[in-house]
Image (cartoon, rainbow, N blue to C red; front, side, top):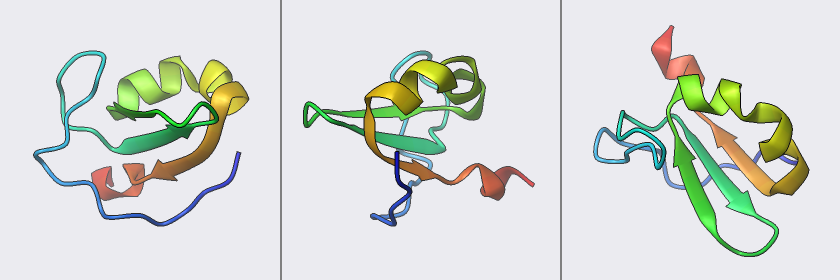
Amino acid sequence: MTSTVAEPLTAADRCDRCGAQAYLRVTLNSGGELLFCAHHARAHSAKLNQVALHIQDETDKLA
């Protein structure tokens, strides 16, 4: 997994799991993309690290 800087996530970007504001963009090795809120990113971090090509983490916006 590598961190990259893409377009910043906005309030319009929603978690694919629950619909909350997304703070993580995961680009998959298969070419797909998933968005996660901080809660679901933490809950699924082990699996995401296995399948991610890039992870854009903007959870620092929560501080």
